[in-house]
Structure formats: structure tokens, C-alpha cells
Length: 152
Image 1: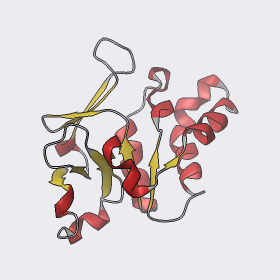
Image 2: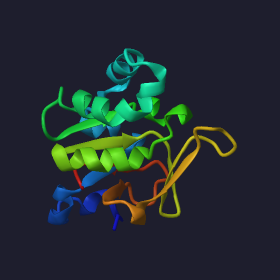
Image 3: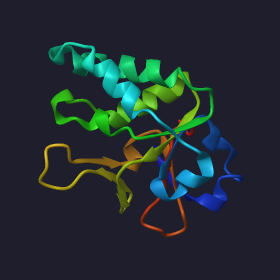
């Protein structure tokens, strides 16, 4: 389902515009991404701890609605709290069906997988790009790549 393209291919890939685009930190300067961490954290803290997992998707959508269509966001680390026990990628993809946006991936890209955290830690997650309706935009072989949500 998901695919990986080089940054220079973006213009040629008209179909990408309907999918979540995921970028790596290296492309932040090109997109002027908006940080969502404080707003997400504040809204999650306003919920009772036992309700945060259930409310995360709703809160993420509400925060995303604060920004115009086509925005690129960053700093989604709060979503990876292991206590939430959610599929963050699924939330990102679902939100893209409502609103056009892209995301700067806060982790690594290796062998067709987006990786968050470090192996052995509770927040460690691995997402196979092919399992999600996303387009991962890479910088021609650079390990620090880009993930866009406007590709869903």
C-alpha cells in the first residue's frame, strides 16, 4: 500500500497528493513545519490518564484543525507514549482522510520501515511503509528522510 520515493520525484507523482506524505528531519527547512507537541500535550493532560488512549485520535484531529490545509507538522513524539497503546501511524493516516497535511517523521528510516525510538525501550515502534497508505519521501539515499501525510 505505502511507497517510497525520492524527493525529486514529488512533482512527477500526482497520485501522491491524495496520500499522507512523511518526511524526515532533513527536510524541515523546506516546509516550515508547525510544532504540535505543546498543544497535544496540554490537551492530553486535561484528560484523565485512563482516558488519554481513547482521546488521542480526537485530540490529534482537533490540534490539526488549528492549521490550514497543506500544513507540515512536526514534534509528534507525545503520541508515542507507551501508556497510550495506540497505532500512531494509523491515527496519522486516518487524519489525512479528513485534512491534507504532511508530517516530519521523528525517527529513522531503514529497509522500508519507519522506526521510532530505540530498540529495548517501551516507546520503540517499527512501521512497515508497505502496510500503510503513505508515501515516504526520501532525499536520494540519505538515511535522514521525510514522511508526508498529504499522501494518504
